[in-house]
Image (cartoon, rainbow, N blue to C red):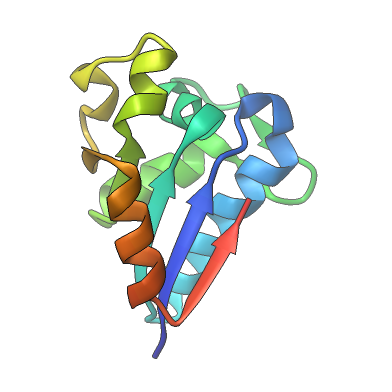
Length: 120
């Protein structure tokens, strides 16, 4: 299988792009691919989704369900620390996720180590 990086920088206001990125990531995981997800810019807001129905894409699912899948399957998330801080988030944003804050060098490392990088 392949090693994929899904880089999501779209926030809840772009619900179709954000949920599509998550749907593609989950599909890659279900197909047995090695997966990393990096959230940056407004994509950091996605982890703040608390309820079903808050962010629902057209044909791409409910973000809350996607986030629950990530938690249940312990999928690794990297979250831009600078983006999160600039948007008023602290470590509590990562609660419940297999996640850590990362800097741009981590995004570059993940990109060059991956077979495929998809951005949403």
